[in-house]
Image 1 (tube, one colour):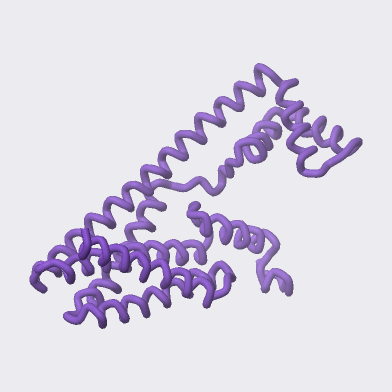
Image 2: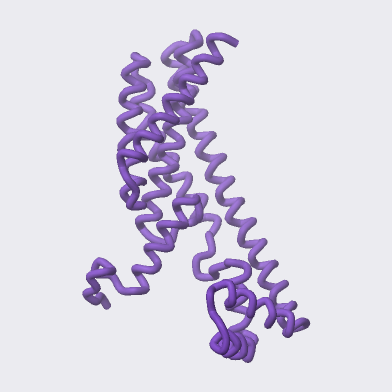
Length: 247
């Protein structure tokens, strides 16, 4: 049920908190939990694929490779790149789930075998959050009185594991593959332009659009984001050209 909250932009407090957390998570490459985060990852993966394709196009421009061969190389390498990055993302998500599950079992055993030491850890955690006596002792006593609540609290506060936002391997890997395919579809026709200069300009325009999209989702300055990404892109291509020509 929607409620009118001016500060939350007509979202509920729960939805607002979820959106804010997701914005910070996707910015550092963590799994998304909202539609905005999903779009951010798609734009980011499409951008990475486009830059990768232009790297290959640059090599084809510098070396004697026919237009038909260039198309075959770009398409084949693009698909391989997308598959590799998607599967790697899924594997990382699986590793995270395995690690988290093992840590949760380990934490459960520690609570059962060393409850007093867990109380001391909990005391330090909440003290570092700024809580002071007597409220600090009351909170520790209350949470420690329930082993299930203590386990859930330690999982969140000590291990920083959020059970409700576990990165499903297929979801994360699929998102990366989808973003890569979008990048392949968008960039491939531009990169294959017969004129290398035109290909670079058109790719730069698309890079600008994707970078601006990412910045707007995060609420960051669009111009700063675009300037940085384009600067990195141009410098990287220049390094490739210089090395091929002079090495």
